[in-house]
Image 1 (tube, rainbow, N blue to C red):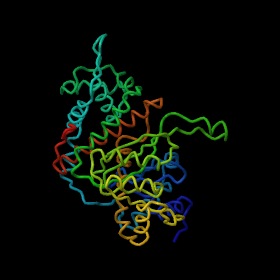
Image 2: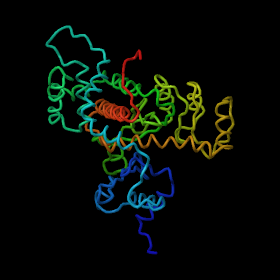
Image 3: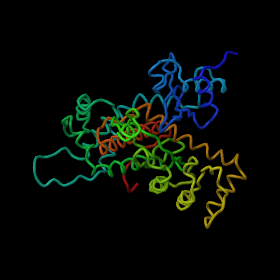
Image 4: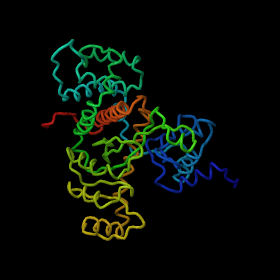
Length: 394
């Protein structure tokens, strides 16, 4: 056997930890970054494997992440691709019709947004239509000017009353007042799947901005580094719908966002299980799930003794984890679906945010997640025959 080079050896090390590699689709995997925040995407373009890590971009030959996937495929006896059960008829139909249905669902969703009263001046583009255009632009991944043609098409389909100026989207994304509305729309866009989802996974992933931090450059004389935002999400284990989301700066601790996500998910869904990795392991997080009638499946850190200190929920969870590990792992495995959710979002809509300031970056990311949820609804219309309705009294 030929000796491994350095990248192959690093790829084998990545593969050796099963939590590093996540299957997304037949030709896409995500791999946790070994040196920092976020994940890398490894995908097969029909001729060869590619990765979006700096090493592959520079050399355009197999990096350690690609080697990790090749080891994964060899062990699983899959030379070219991984095949999972899939209703291909429904999937193909949803993909073909997605562009047509997207506008109609988005228009129906934004109609629940209350319009602010205008007392004077020329009639402005309604808030509903501003949000429609913003989500449509992010969905298309086109520039503001190039997206103008999409607005004209939407007007022809009567989804818009008139075609807005191309700067309308940029103006909206820069408004702090629209941020709570986008959060509410994401939760509301998941509501039609309440009959399908009871188990959820919670995790976070980074999205790169085009802004650069200066602290490390000035203090440690390092190269410029992009500023990241974190999306913390609660994702359905069956459909991968985003039930709730919190956007924070990249250095915010994950566990602080767990309880708010549980509460947000509970708004429309009946929670049976919530799984998360050991970074979320705390008494308060276990109790937050129990308080909404669910059960948390979160691994315990190696230094935990299981002392309850007044928390019977913590004690029961610890003993279940110790005594019934195989059963625990069967439930905990559902957490991998949240990584699939992030992989699908980044493959379809990219992981880079184009906006220049913090408010616009958060709003752009929320539009990205909202667009993703609508594509999930379209798939479930064909897969499970749902009829989306966003009315709060339904």
